[in-house]
Image 1 (cartoon, one colour):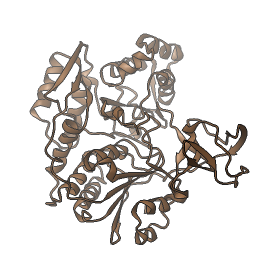
Image 2 (image 1 turned 120 degrees about the vertical axis):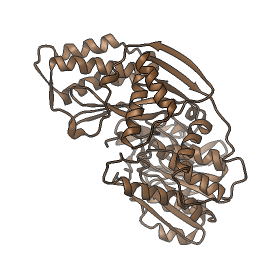
Image 3 (image 1 turned 45 degrees about the vertical axis):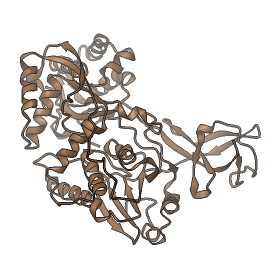
Amino acid sequence: MKRRLVALVFIGLSSSFFLQAQKIISFNDKIELFIDQKYVKEQISYEQLKEDLEFTSYVLNMGYAGNDKMLDKGFDEKSFKDAVMTHFEGKEVIYTDDLIRVFNDNLKPYIKDSHFQLIGKKQIYTMIEKYTCYWTDCYVEKRGEDFYSISNTVGINPDLKYCDDQQNLYYYPSKGSSVYRIAKLSKEPLNSIDVSFDNKSYCLEVFNDGAIEKTNAKYKAFDSKDSAYIALNTFFLPYLDSPDRKSKEIIFNKFIECGYKYGNKKNLILDMRSNEGGDAAYTAAMFYVLYSGKNNNDFSKLIPNMSSWFVDSFSLRENLISPVSCKTKYLLKNNRNQKPSKKEVSLLSSQIENPEKVIETAGYKKSKLFSKESKFKGKIIILTDRNSASAGEIIIPLAKEIFGSESVSVIGENTSGSAMYWDVATICLPNSKAGINTAFAKNKMIEKYDYWNGEGIGIYPDYWSTGQDLNETIFLVTQDEEMKQKLKGISSRLM
């Protein structure tokens, strides 16, 4: 996936912050936006490699919000540059895909960030190792504080006491109100796992349920008497000159309007499976319309207002301010035909004259937007899989904060785990034109949620389910037989 921009484009400055500053030398005139892999050069010279390497080190130090974490893990800039130069020593021609592979090999031990990517002509490297759920066909029932087998379909007799790691038990109510399914999250492919019952070991086969295939933008909404189903697989708005820019704007407006259209339903089912992320302001806007019951069909002001609310009144973050972030955001605004604010222009001018790296810990400003009683009285059901990423998974804490955890149920598998780093953009290297997808903000808010388990692991659902049992699990929450009939086929696709 060419993830050029998968978070909020501009993060405004909070009125309450703590600053740490570091004087730097600027590469301001070298900063350009990465547009597409087709513009990446096949090869560069050894001399051009030197400049691309210096620029990469500059971006890591001055344009990546996770640089402090890299240093904590032992990253050394000189050792990185020495390793790259040594690898290509004596070569007159450097192939770009070889270059980013070597970059990846020397950076991956120090970066744990699902958004961070190195993009070459043909190859894209992501720094995170994704954890996937591998399922058995063995179920246990909780009785008091212990768990007992309830099926012998895999060669295990009923009523045997489970004597193994309880982290491998996943609440699976489609098989019963106290039933858990044995599975294991792993970053490595698995064919089987060993499980102990009554202190006897059993080898159980496991399978990977797969995920909804990522496709072009897809939106679908329909309802029953009591419920509404909404599927959307992206919140990413393309650049202004993109051929599908207008169609995305139409889709997002329809999505926001659903908050008003379905505000009287008992159940709102949001299918975020395979949602690649984008701008969380669209979700916040839909939730505002759902919460307030207000709909004027003109969201041109609501979306930027919700973007500001998301930054100032929902998030707790560390923002990186430097020539890299200021120039990149300025370029992004121009690319999207959006006028930079006076503060943005002033910041960029200041960074050009006096370049420095500033870490801003943003404060929290209470908002009145969600202070009244919600007009929506129903339940929100969010469907997730391992491809629910960034804004496609931030929708979960958004919904729980706005409507209350008791009104929100998450069904499916763990999400992508792409929520720690925000304000993401892709910068191209000056000679090879390869891309570095970097983040200018660190999300501190996500760490307070016990259902967040880290980059690459993501958010755990309230009710685990494979595709085969998804419709039945939704029905357990909605008790809507009409919607259950409409959702036949949901196991393997967005409706």
